[in-house]
Each structure stands twice: as C-alpha cells, then as structure tokens.
Image 1 (cartoon, rainbow, N blue to C red):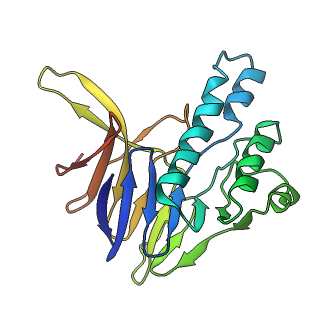
Image 2: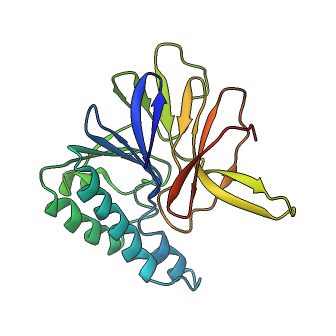
Length: 216
C-alpha cells in the first residue's frame, strides 16, 4: 500500500488495484467487469472459470483489510447482461450488510435497474463527495473547484529496461484536475497513457505500488 495526496485528500493505493479514502472510509474500485469471463466462454473463448472466483476473493480480501463503510464502483461493475455470476456477487453484498455498495453507472452496466435494487446497490450517473466528482468516463472539460476520479480507460504504462525489454503495467494516474483508477478485473486490457509535467503515476507491479517520477 502507498499513500497519495490527491487534491488535498489522502488516498491509500492498494496493489489489488483499488483506492481507499480513510477520511470517509470509502473503498473505490473501477472496472470490475464481473461476468466477463462467462461472456467470453459463451463466445467460445477458453478462459478459466477460476478467474471469476479470483476477482471476488481479492475484493473480499480488501473489505477485510480496509473495513470500509462504503464501496464505490466507478462503472462497469458487471460486464454484460445478467448471468449467474451476478448472484455470486449478490451473496457477497448480502454478507457485508454493514457496507453501503454504490455504483456510478458505466457503459457495460446494462442490466435493468431492478437487478441493482434487488441487491441493495445504489446507483448514480455521477456522484460528488467532498472535492471529488466520481464518474465512469473521464470528464472532458477541466474542472477548477472539483477533482474528477474516473475509470473506463484501464490506464497502463510501458516501461523499457536497459536491455530494451518492454513491460506494460497497470497504474493509478493523477493529473492536475482528474485521475484514473486502474481496472480491477482480470482480462480487461490496458491503455497506455501519456503524462504531463507534475502528473503522478503509481505503477502496480509484483503486488507492490511504485511511484514513477518520469513522464511517459
């Protein structure tokens, strides 16, 4: 875990690719894409079902570790239309009844509102808490009084070693007025980002967080 000052607020960045805001006891997770593995398998793509369990196990481990009062998903909680994986997630929500589960709707959150309601999940198009404006897609215009935290992009960086070997890794990205959380789910892919001067990039590698000081 590594702490980061984001717009004057202290966030804890976890190598499980989630962020915790201790001041409000909020755990932030982007792009979990539950059900994506089942979606792939229906399309004939051989993806191990074990990956479904792994996503849930890592998420539950974070609940025990951070003890949040609220869990905020920054979009794409569920990848596709209803499938049995949604019921598995529902059992997790039911077990942690003291936690408020909330979702900022993403482009893959296409199930009916009734499905979220029956699991007790609150949902929004966007949500403001303190100085942060939470969205799924990054806000296009630059904000002044608020800081935008979003998902959707699945941010990553390409690192080049001395022997010219290359490695792409997921990252947390924090710019002047907006930031991106890495995709939490497996098999989500990465999109390389370019940073500007004074931006902060925290790379996730080998279950650790590393601050990258150079621009990419």
